[in-house]
Amino acid sequence: LTLQHALFLDFDGTLAPLQDNADTVHINEAQHETLLQLSHARDGALALLSGRDVRDLAARTPRGVTRIGNHGLYALAPDTDPDGALDPLPASLERALNAAVGRQDGAYLEVKGPVGTVHYRACPDAGPMLIDAVQTAVATHKNYKTKLGNHVAEAIPIGADKGSALERAMSSPPFAGRIPVMVGDDTTDEDAFLAAQRLGGFGVKVGRGETVARKQLANVSAVWAWLGASL
Ligand SMILES: [Mg+2]
Image (cartoon, rainbow, N blue to C red; front, side, top):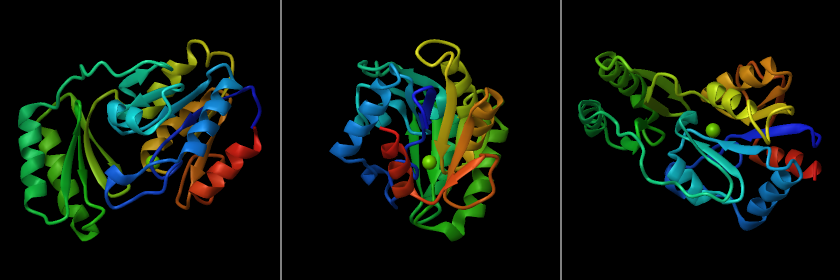
């Protein structure tokens, strides 16, 4: 990793270990400081790129870096705050997703602006049933698609993906002209690995599993060790 690299970092499962309850996932003060240093050393060419609602992501991460949430739909420049005006999830879609999680103990729906996320980490056996329910609900909303991740099935607007978000960021300062590196742990990061590699950089897959990324790191601790070594 050099100062020529623009860094794109997923949050859950990449910078912080996954938890049963997504609300308890966090990074510590020293890690906040490391992210700020990595960003400042690159004139701000560091973005957190997460499927979380951008307001939720902003509450867990340093205000001094670029934060891109909702699978790339909303970007916050350094030192700016979310304005709270996100498009809503269509009410009919929210009702259908709520009905699906209501049939299953341990499953819950998280609404993140226009994105509806069904979580089933606490009841993994119900995964196929819940995935099917999300796909059925999405089928009647033509601007939506289903995105599967680690114990989540999401209804997300077409065009919302981390690869497009990375490409948009790379088209302007402070990212333009640098070599993109995307670090992530999940299937939703694969689009961004491909985008980074198309633009001359590389992807870094965290954990096991099939991936298009050219580099792999074992876990969250290995990510911090790797990032820290470049300071
Ligand atoms: Mg992740």
